[in-house]
Length: 208
Image (cartoon, rainbow, N blue to C red; front, side, top):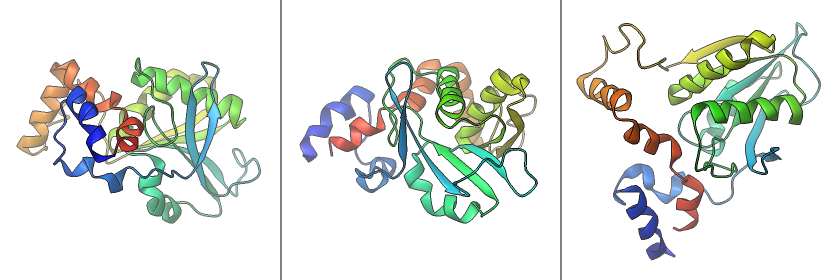
């Protein structure tokens, strides 16, 4: 099976020696559940902490939707278990092509947020929740809050070790030179940015 990954690597211009392409980062047996969206694709997610009952408005708990970094929910399983508690229902979602979510060739930050809205509204029947974005997930959390915050569903939006939009004032002021360079490339070279969010992780790992 190892040789079959070459076509995927060539298509995306990937170096098989990159550590982030290591097979251990892409488990074939993902944890979690799936929900079929109205467009036919599947969106993967997992729930940690308080898993039963409606807690959106009660004092003893709260809902949290976590748009994680560039990996699927299985990669952060230990962190998710540690961060969740009996009073918090932590819902972690897989982006298209990662974890149990179907790949979407036309995937954008906004389209993913709309998919998540359908999941939490129609699939999970949540009427009130908080949203948290970690690392690269920050832009998704901001976009989600912008799109749906006025509907009173999103009670708060929290960014953890994340950055905002590319034109945020002084966003790169304290960044190391390498990070500033990466920021510039993402802001000014859309094709490079698209590679980062549209890589079909599930297809790659199945070819290993």
